[in-house]
Length: 286
Image (cartoon, rainbow, N blue to C red):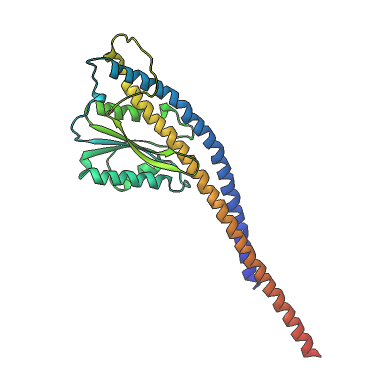
């Protein structure tokens, strides 16, 4: 019985140590989440201004055209998939990877019909193990990524569309709703079906020409949307991690309570047995 009680005490101590770790990780993720939300929100005005200028050119200028605004027969599709580098993020990676693979299976019959640009070690490892065609990858991003970290990948994807290596591009990420809810999202990035800014727009004069401005702005707009999806995905990752660590902490507390109850019962049983043996010995001597 004493040996069993010692084992239960070791288990309680082990779970208490685990709870301290998960609680600390939950608090760290919570602090980082606030910063990630602020960065995601701060990036939106720039994207909206680009959208306003592009929509102004596309809607208000006759005869303006650009490959990014025109649909063509789809021979090959590119997918930009945003995942995490680390674990302990609940179903964050599994949800988006499942959605992407389901889409690929429904749209394609051969790996020659698509290519994958993947951000995050979890996504890279997932696709490599299953022999998916990974075109380019970016891993080991910080919790506060910069555009320079994914510049080469975004440039390669957008250039691939402009040079007709790909005929459409989808960006796949987890849209941040709140700390508990992250929505796996797949959006068509290119070609732009319609670029219409919300609310009133300003009137612009373009130099050297509307076509020249579009030639510069449309790739930047596409790259901005990819970076915005990354910031949204990073907020979702931290939200999922905070939730997962919070659940782990609650489960550890519940386990400690159950083990403590088991320990107390075992201790009471041991005391009762000792008293019974003492009484039995006393009766035998009388």
